[in-house]
Image 1 (cartoon, rainbow, N blue to C red):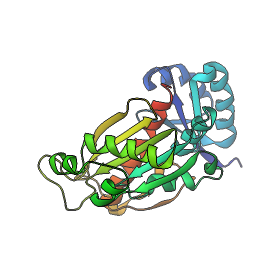
Image 2: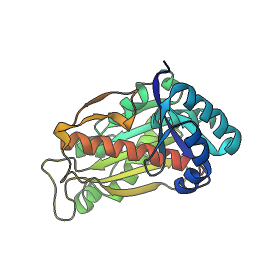
Image 3: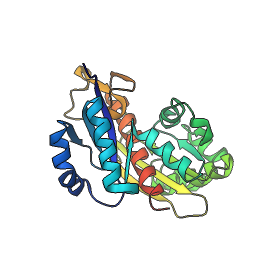
Length: 250
């Protein structure tokens, strides 16, 4: 009996709704489940059917489609294809981004290292974040994430970097920046950064009862999440999406 399998799929030049329409007939023919995740979709079904769909979709969309086991494997594939190296500067994600890359065999050809600048003093001393900006804007801010990106690019000598700073909770939030507020950034050396603010709400989530798979695939680590872990996981996932989006503009 053919085993169940899953795969992530991203489209470079069209939105996911349009992609779903174009793929609908083949998805129905192969009895696949298409779960829309926003900037990508999760395909689930029999391994042979997913293999057949992958062959068809690559033939139809050519270089405009990317498939992989998880977001980090897709990102590594894109970085390798573009001959780029990567570094991370993490605060609220606490090294999770670095882990998600380094758990994949062969990541060393792309990933050069990361700096977990959890304390502000490390942001200042190692990454060169201005003390005045930390005081005036706070660690969870666009100016600080921008400087974290520049700092880690300089310290690690990488071609591209991703950075995170946020309020993972359960304490530390404010009216302006409640728990779940996160700034994420991506930047290539010598180019403008992409910095976004996100909010990951946990108010109505029954996390304790969920066996939540990291990156939503059946091939990766899963565990029972606390609200704090959920925010860290969602932040790292969004950062990977941003990285892939940024790479597609280069």
